[in-house]
Amino acid sequence: MVSELNLFILISIGFFIGAVGAFSGLGGGFVAVPLLLFLGYSAQKAVGTSFVVILIISASALYAHNRFDNVDFKTGLLVGLGGIIGAQAGAQLVQYVPTELFRKFFALFLAGISAYLFFKK
Image 1: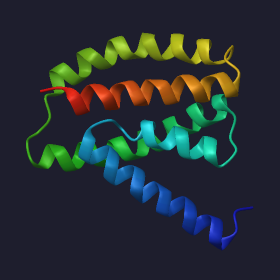
Image 2: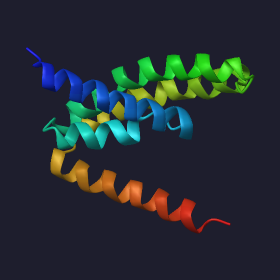
Image 3: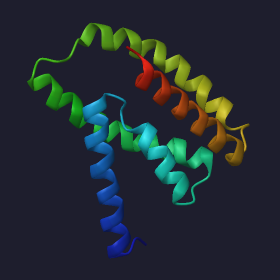
Image 4: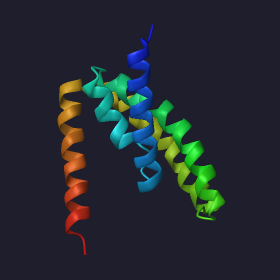
């Protein structure tokens, strides 16, 4: 059972992930996964749980962005169709990656993206 303090912490984390995800367009997974790892989740459980988080936050962000006419549904649906296949492959692959190796890979991935965005003109 979730205590009142844990409930507050989880909702606060959700608020942060939602704000960052809707602002950046990254869905929040890049924030949710490290936070779930920090809370002690295995890599596989953190990734899987983050998709529940992303689903809820993405639906809300889609609604908000659509109000400002910032959504290209055709492109989103086409990329999403490819994403369905990629998601199945990724879910299969992560089952074979130990949590400690996943943490290191994920950290390098985020650092690489950060450096690219920082130094890109």
